[in-house]
Image (cartoon, rainbow, N blue to C red; front, side):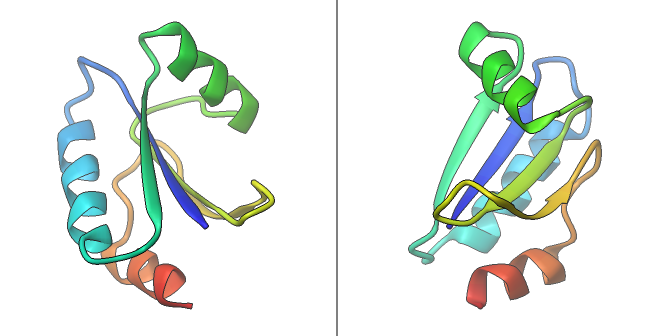
Length: 86
């Protein structure tokens, strides 16, 4: 399982989304990858997952299949915690 956060420089909600994910993931064995969509690598990954706005947080399984996502919004802390614990 992995958590992917897509953000951009001028996004007013992106810092809060990144902070929330970092808080929930602290102490977890689940890896977190952050992608700035203002650079080539971030945009390529965002295109692969169909990200159309930021912040977007996507939880994927070991096969890179989407488990749950929060698109163009800050993730729900309770839902994210439950997904990570299962």
